[in-house]
Amino acid sequence: MAQRPAPPTATDEEVRVLLERYKCPVPFHEVRTRFLGNIATPAMGVSPIKIVESLWGGKLPEFEALDGANELIGALIMGLWNRLSSHQERSAPFRLTRSEPRATREGLAALALMRRQELDGFIEGLFGPEQALDFPERAHRGLGALSDMRALFAATHAAVADETVPGTGTDMQTTLRLMREMTKNAEHEIHAIVLSCTRARRQILASLPVMKPTPH
Image 1 (cartoon, rainbow, N blue to C red):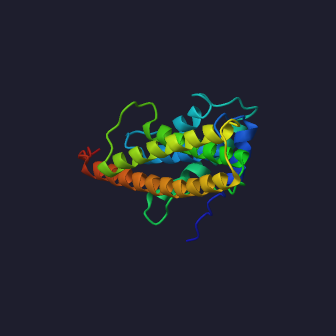
Image 2: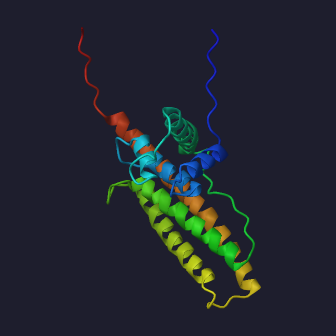
Image 3: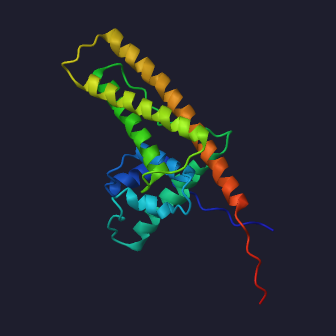
């Protein structure tokens, strides 16, 4: 029997356009990592619509018609959220937003800021409104590593954005190379955290008791 084809989902570029249209204060690269963190979180009862609302401070933007709300929510959840869910598999590691900046103060500052925001988004998604959560040991170690890298990206952004801090062209090239290495390390830790949390959550769900159905 032929099956009805699934409707096409919004691409990343289409999601980006919608976020700009509705003046989302969170940049797209941070939205990606915030969603990924919320997908992987060990907290139970996660609601995708809640994380969408959090992008606008807890309440969806104003829409002129219902179609607009359906378009935005469909693009973010049926499109972006579902695509990011594939990174719960070992064979599908997550990649941070690709950027090829020039080795200048402006280029390095933009890259360092983007990476810091991406790591902030991932942590925000993992914890949500919680101040503390129980994480598997591997995820706990990964969070420590990400915290260190986040601090380095923030310090790099502050240094290269400060014109009073001296720096030669060679210094800029070295900084760019180091940030590329940190990007790879951050991706490795994010992937490890996602896998660790996903495995732990599946084990918890598998151990939950099942109630005997009541006959009618």
